[in-house]
Each structure stands twice: as structure tokens, then as C-alpha cells.
Image (tube, rainbow, N blue to C red; front, side):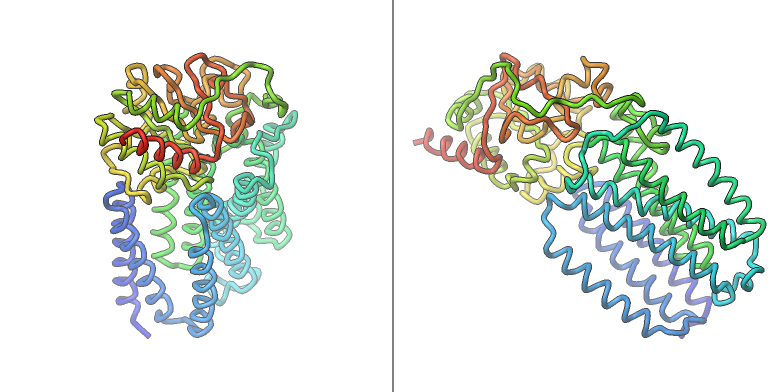
Amino acid sequence: MITQELAAYGYLISAICFIMALRGLSSPTTSRAGNLYGIVGMVVAIGVTVLSPGIVSPWLILAGLVVGGTVGTIVAMRIQMTALPQLVAAFHSLVGLAAVFVAAAAFVSPDAFGIGSPGHIKTQSLIEMGLGTVIGAITFTGSIVAFAKLQGLVSGAPLVFRGQHYLNALIGIVIVLLLVWFASAGHPVTFMLLIILSLAVGFLLILPIGGADMPVVVSMLNSYSGWAAAGIGFTLGNTALIVTGALVGSSGAILSYIMCKGMNRSIFNVILGGFGTDGGAAVAAAGGKPDKPVKAGSAEDAAFLMENASSVIIVPGYGMAVAQAQHALREMADLLKERGVQVRYAIHPVAGRMPGHMNVLLAEANVPYDEVFELDDINRDFASTDVAFVIGANDVTNPAAKTDPKSPIYGMPILDVEKAQTVLFVKRGMSSGYAGVENELFFRDNTMMLFADAKVMCENIVKALEGSAH
């Protein structure tokens, strides 16, 4: 065992490591170091907690670490990069559920936590416990819905109904009143009602949000999980949990705000649910085949157009992730650069299924960081670009976001690929994007559709480029 003073120093070291981790994760070039700082911080925090005074069963804690660590390792080793957003959403749900369980344990056995006795819990502890429970329960069910949408188990289109905002507001008011009642009386029935209503709110907040906005949802749920952890940290009197939860909560909220600004969304609508819609029925594209004509091309056509261009901007999306095409794409870009073509990558803030999804995939393929640009830094360049090579990015290039007020993605800034001289669009078929909106870019005169698996198409373009060099 260690003294309280040493435990405080240990938690301070852990907190510093977590701050350094966030600092490192702010840039692709320092992200590995950031991850290492986070690992060290967590190891220190766990070690200090297990060795702290008052821990009755350290071996039980270690057994839980072994089981959880084993499961986490197996999942991490087997998970595909395409499923990373689903994994993050699933982990968020576990954090929320853990917060609810800890609050329940503290409510049932307050003497074990040093916050009073059954029926006589400190008011401050009841407030902390209630807030942690509410946020944790909302995070749990909200993350489950996000996981189901990302996994394709639930439609990516907004699921809305008349009066949903009034219902959410009513439940929110009831939860606030219950929190006040719980803090003053600490009644078990009140605690159960808080859990049930908060679980319902998690479903009601996330179901109305469309697929195109799901990256912001993942970011906001990340923030919720942090605040839930911080709330329970106060109940447990654990400094490391308070600091870590506050860091995750605040950084997630800041990221969500930045993304909302970039998508022309309201941060309050994100918090309250149902953003990306007007509160009425969502407008989704029909699933049938469109009657409009499209111009289809081959890998050889694409290779000819790009190798004779002076500049090419590549726009990666979730289709690239599904096909695991990033390595073939980098090989294609390398061949174009050997021919004197300027090649750059344009990343939309919500490309993929979570913030930074495309950046991670491109980094995995060793794409140089200085060739990757965010929307604001490159959007003006499309008008002077010969070829825009769109690989599986649908909603983030859809002009309907600028032209159709009834569209669920209306108001979302897009990559202006339609302004390029030629748009090469790699896609398996003519289906709509994750938001369920038909992309009118498919039918533009300067668009050539390349119907194929993204990886196969990139590999065939590489072969065509190599063949033209001989």
C-alpha cells in the first residue's frame, strides 16, 4: 500500500500524461507519442488506485483488468479500420454503463464509499451521483444507437416523428425535477426513474440524427462519456477520474463545436438531438434506379485523364475505407507524381464515420502529411484543378447541400469537386450515400463514373499507368 500523499503525486503524474496525450493527438506527426503518453498515464492511474489505502480486494481489481484487457486486446487485434467508428461508439456505451453501475453501487452501499449510510447520503454526493447517472445512461443508449447506425443495423436516415422535440423537452424537465427530488430525499424510486428516463433520452436524441452527421454524434458522445466519468469521479473521490473525465468531456465538446461550425450546424441542436432535419419528415432518395443518363468510364480512361493533367485532387471517403483501397490509392498517386502531376488529398470534416477517420487511413498508407488538406484550405483550388478523383465520398460532395433546402444535408459545407474540369467518381453503383440522398453530381456533364470496387479500380488504374510508361 502507498500513502495518500504518494497517491496524490501519482494521480498528478497520470493527469500530466493525459494532458500530454491530448497534445500529441492534435497532430498526425505526434500522434504515436500521444498514444504512448496516454498508455503511461493509464498504467500509473491503475497502479496508484490498486495500491491506494482503503482498497479491500486488489486481486479482484487485477482479475477484472486481466479479463477486460484480454477482451480489449482481442477486439483491437481483429478490428478492421472500417469498423473503428463502431468500436469507438461501443466503447463509449461501456463508459456510460460503468458510470451508472458505479452510481448504483454507491447508492446501495454509501458507507463503502465514505459518503454516508443507507438513507442518509450526503446531499453533495447525491447531486454528483444523480448527474453521473443521467449522463452515463444517456451515453449508454445513445452510443448503442450510434453503433447500430454505423454498423448498418439501423437506417442511417433520420428517424423522426411529430412532436419529438416537445417530448424530449418534457422528459428533460422531468429529469431535472427528479434530480432535485433525488438530491433532497435520496429515494430509491427516484433513482430508478432517473435511470429509466435517461436511457430513453439516449435513444430519442440519437435516432433523429442522419448518417451524414454521425461523426459529430460520435464526438459528442465522447464528450458525454467524459462528463459521466468526471461525475462519478467526484462520488468516488478519485482525482485521476475527475481530471481524465474533464479532459475527455471538454475536448470532445470543443471538437464537436468546431465540427458543427464547419458543417453549419447548431451546437445546441447537437446536444438536444434531431439536428440535420427540420423536425419534419426527412427527405431521402428513392432506392430505385434513376432514369437520368450517366457517363461511365474505365480504369484506362481515368489513367489517361490523370496522367495528362497538371493537378489532381483526391477526395477519400468511407467507400475507400470499406474497400481498404488506401494503399493502392497511394501507389496510384506516386505514379502520377513521377509524371509531374501535382497530387493532393482533400479531407472533409465528416468524411468517413468519425472525426479523423480518413486521416488515419491515409497515414496507415504512408501518405505524406503535407499532401493532405482540410476543406477550408483546399476548397477554392477545385476551380483550377484538372481532375477531382472522388473515391467513395458521397454525401460530402453532394451539391444538394447547397441547392436543396429540403435535403437533410442542406447547409452542410461540401467539397466543391463539381468545379473541377473533370470529376472521376469511384463507386460500386448508383445508390445514395449514408444520409440517403441521391447525389446529383453523378449526372453532371463533367463527371465520369467509375463503377467498381475502390481497391480494384485503383489497382487497375495503377496497371494502366504502368502500361502507358512502356
